[in-house]
Length: 131
Image (cartoon, rainbow, N blue to C red):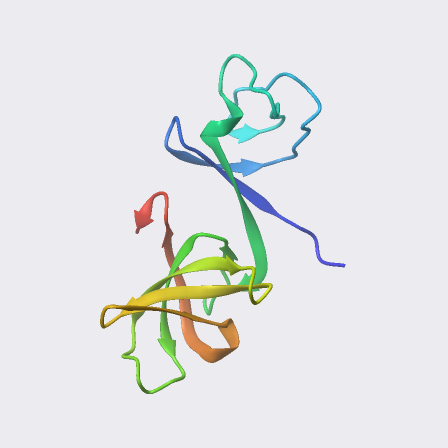
């Protein structure tokens, strides 16, 4: 069984945090560089609504970096219709029950499965932008 991993975007402090564990049944959060506990109701220090939980999609880019939901990636499409080096964002598509890369080209929005792409490299995320 694959282990699920997460990161958390702290929208208030504008920083990405590593998740050590989440317990939604308590009413406090320790203020450290990694979230240890987060209350579903807020804790007086940070409102839970300031946090966005981001899931690891169990896939790595061509450099061996873990890919998370909402990551920005550069890639080359298998379809010759698209140019190389496009910028896309990793999204979850409920209609396909899968993580895909969504991108814009020539005024239209497209989504492709990872198996349809090559040269995928994480270059940032939607919260911090491209690095």
